[in-house]
Amino acid sequence: FLMIRSTPTLDPSAPLLRDSRVPRAFRDAAAAALAKPDLDLADRLVHEGLSIAPGNPDLGNVADRVRRAREERVGLGRR
Image 1 (cartoon, rainbow, N blue to C red):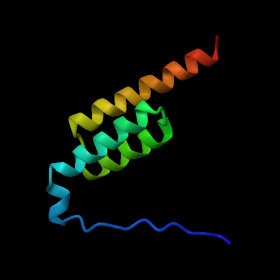
Image 2 (image 1 turned 90 degrees about the vertical axis):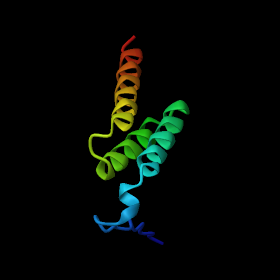
Image 3 (image 1 turned 120 degrees about the horizontal axis):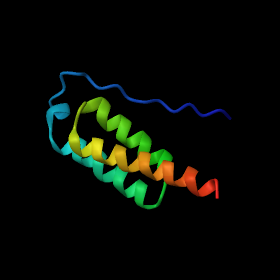
């Protein structure tokens, strides 16, 4: 069986999108994924969060941490 995952779409004018808890929840989930480390999941969560809250500094900080973790992983692979 082929399962298709649907992604719900949000109305850009939905009040929830202006709620400061939403980007915070994405930040926290991305940071938790980064700690595992599940860099792919952390990266997806950061990008989803930034699509809702572009320019959010907290999400940007986690995005930088994900990027550095990827760079470190690549660097370790070269040794």
